Length: 296
Ligand SMILES: Cc1cc2nc3c(=O)[nH]c(=O)nc-3n(C[C@H](O)[C@H](O)[C@H](O)COP(=O)(O)OP(=O)(O)OC[C@H]3O[C@@H](n4cnc5c(N)ncnc54)[C@H](O)[C@@H]3O)c2cc1C
Image (cartoon, rainbow, N blue to C red; front, side, top):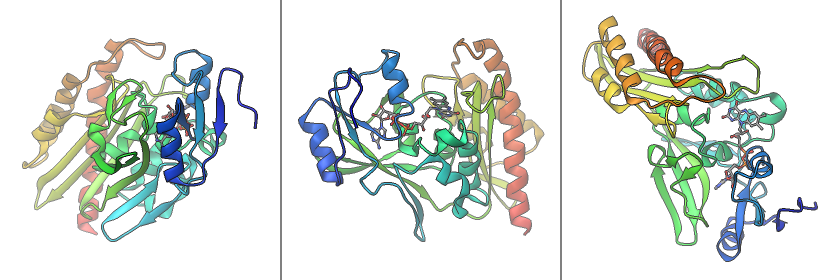
C-alpha cells in the first residue's frame, strides 16, 4: 500500500513489542481503522501529517474474551463486533451493543475500532459512555511496560488522552457487575442520519438492593470537553430509595455538571435543556430494568 503524500510511511508490525518499539523510535502515530485519523489529517487538524503510520490491526488485538471476573475487549475490535456479541445481549452489558449500533453506518462500523473511538478522545465518542457507566479499565502497553488506568482518567481533553506518545491502548476491561443492575444508553442526534455525531449522549446504570440504590452511574457525552461521569448527580442517588423527586434532582444536578458548547449540531442552551430530560428518562429505564432483574 502506498501512503498518501503527506504521510511519511506505513508500517505493519506483527507483534505488540515491535509496534511499541516503532512508536518510540520514530516520528510515528498508531492507526487502526483510520476513520478518524485519515479524515482529520486531510482537514489539517491532526498531528499525523509528516509521520509514519503504524498499523495496529495485525497485533491480535481484535478479540472479545470473558473470564469469571471480567469481559476483555481488544482495542482493535471492530465496532460492529460489539453489536452482535452474545455477551452484550443482556442488561447491563447490552448498553455496549446499543452504543455500537448508534455508531455511524454498517460499512464504517466494520472498519472503525473500539480503541480508535476512545483514543481519538472526541467529546462525542459513543462507546466511551457505556464503558464509563460500566466502570471499565484501560489496559495500556508502552516502552516502560504495561499499566492500567480507570477509563474515567483516560480522557484529558478534546483529542487528548493520558497515553504517552509511544503507548498503545491494548485492552478494555469491563468488571462483572452484580446481577441486580439495570442500564440504558441514549443518543440524541440532530438529523437522525446514521452518520450523525451526538448532540447529547448518555449512559446510566443503577443497582438496587432492598429498595435502596447501592450504586449509580451517569455518563455524559457531547456536553463538555470529554465524555465524563456526573459524580455529584450519582452521589444524590446512592444510598437512598429512588423516587421521582430523587431522579429529577439527579438529572438537574447532571445538567449543572455539564459545560456544553455551541457547534454545528446544536446550541449550548439546547444541550443544557436536553440533559435533564435525557438523564431522567435514562435513569427511569435503568431503574425499571434493575427492578425487573431482581423480580426474575
Ligand atoms: C462518516 C463518519 C461517521 C462517524 N460516526 C461516528 C458515530 O456515530 N459515533 C462515534 O463515536 N464516532 C463516529 N465517527 C468517528 C470514528 O469512526 C470513530 O471514532 C471510530 O471508532 C475510530 O476508530 P478507528 O479505528 O477508525 O480510529 P483511527 O482513525 O485509526 O484512530 C483514531 C485515533 O486514535 C489513535 N489510536 C487508534 N487506536 C489506538 C490504540 N489502540 N492505541 C493508541 N492510539 C490509538 C490514532 O492514532 C488516532 O489518533 C465517525 C466518523 C466518520 C468518518
